Amino acid sequence: MFRIRRIHDDTLSANRAALEKVQELLREQFPDLPEERVAELPAQLRDPLTSRFRTVVFVAETREGLRGAAVLLHAPDLEFCFLDFIAATAGETGTGIGGALYERVREECRILEVKALFLECLPDSQSPVQKPGFVPQVQSPLRFYSRYGARRVVNTAYEAPINPGDTDVLPHLVVDDMGTGRVLRRAEARAIVRAILERRYGWLCPPEYIDMVVRSFVDDPVALESLRQSKPNLPKVPTKAAVAREAKAAAARELKAPTAGAKLTALAPVKLSGPKEARSIPSDLRVLVVANEKHDIHHVRERGYVESPARVGVIRRELGKSELFEFHKPERFDDSHVTAVHDAEFVRYLERMCASLKDKPSVYPYVFPIRNPARPPRDMPVRAGYYCIDTFTPLHFNAWPAARRAVDCALTGGHALLQGRHFAYALVRPPGHHAERKTFGGFCYLNSAAVAAHYLSSHGKVAMIDIDYHHGNGQQDIFFRRADVLTVSIHGDPQFAYPYFTGFADEVGEEEGEGFNLNLPLAEKITSSQYSRTLAQALNRIRQFAPSFVVVCLGLDTAKSDPTGTWSLRAVDFEENGARIGALGLPTLVVQEGGYNTRTLGVNVRHFFRGLWEGAATAKRRHEFR
Ligand SMILES: [Zn+2]
Image: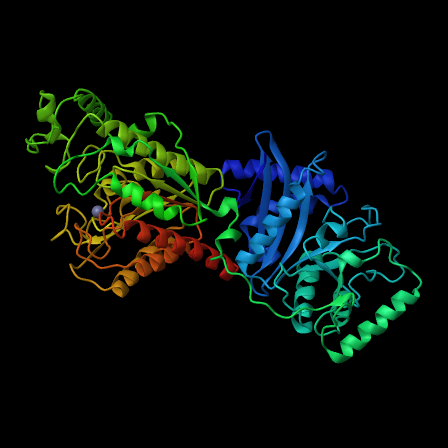
């Protein structure tokens, strides 16, 4: 089994290693390709300005390593893609890797909503050894692409020799409309062909040659030949059939209308299928859901304890209705990840205290020795208040294992981002964002999101955005003196909302971390557009910070009729907010925090993710050359 994933950049070591393998593959499969073309691939990914294409790399991998790759060039300004390379490793022919890669490329083109996918092919009969420098970039023969309905552009000088008298066979230009039946108009084809030749082959093709090829596109719409019907060897001397075909083609051109049944085909415009069509979502673009399967052992059976096991069930049910999600079991991570952000004594206390409560009643903190932090009470149950910020978050036998497993879920999601996933979702209970370095409270014991953010921070800067109704005091405390993790929180003003003592706008970070904590407290009653404006402000700060990863503390207690909040966001608002966050275009880990109205919780989560996904897809389509 192989899996296909997209490489976004070369900042992660997993991606760097994969890119090196892709370069090896290109050298092996295209020996005539100049070394500088191969060497520039990582730079091309980082900097679309120089090549004037956004470069998209797909790799097909097994446990043993790289099995194939495709390099796609996206021109957002002209709304087309050009398949630069597609190849499988030696010995992989017939295993379906080429086909799977090509299908993934087509899916990407649909998501990018480009007009068409262009590629180059030699006629089936031609050997792939060509003029040095102008190598066939695409390994497979024409007939391979014909299976997907790709068609050769005909009646143009695209294959004309670069220098008069050259005898080399140059590749055909092939166009794949991804099944939309969209017509290719002359004007757009001219602009696209000019872009391909200038941006991709500018080093090889003189301007006069490019002008000549562009001018040779006279048909409108551009004439295309069905590859399925093309002969393996194009005759040098016109046969009767070819003459007849030409006559028919000329007639078609005169009519400027598609001809039915002829080899020249042009189809009626069809609206592109949007990314909302769930079936078109490739596996590597789905949201990886890591659910805490141990969450329900944590069950505080008390009236009014709204943080109930039912919450995860309603979310799971809603996610199951969409193809956008892919479920994955959590992996086990070492405790050192936890103690990297939490006080080791505090962690040991939580574990030992919970373990001591088998078959015993829960312990509610009741003494808060805040005046003498140097003296933790000796008695274990009494000591609970030394580590807690409120009186409603009990310790009991299962609180520790559930909270610890939630951390594993968040770390598994974070690890998936390092492996090249775009979106991961830790669907966990208990929540974590109120857990500070040395305290628990607010239904939270360990700050799963902060643990994952710290883990990611060794691979690049991390921005945490907390959109729970309540202030994310936990990660604020944990990262207050750090400049490599930006913490942002939008919440009900602590003047009236829990936790009451943090979340004010003047808490901006300390020492190195000064300016790297942003609190955006809001009034008791707000409109969804006020919320939206505040979110835009938060995201501007994140853009300015330029992180490599985003961690979202997702609270749905901002929703209408939440028992712990005062705001009235609806599903449509969550979708819009998700889209704004997705538009950052960054690998994003979402960690479940609050949200207690179980009638709407699941629907709101699903809408949030739909927005997140759409936002990311739109960002890719509108991507300006940075
Ligand atoms: Zn909350």
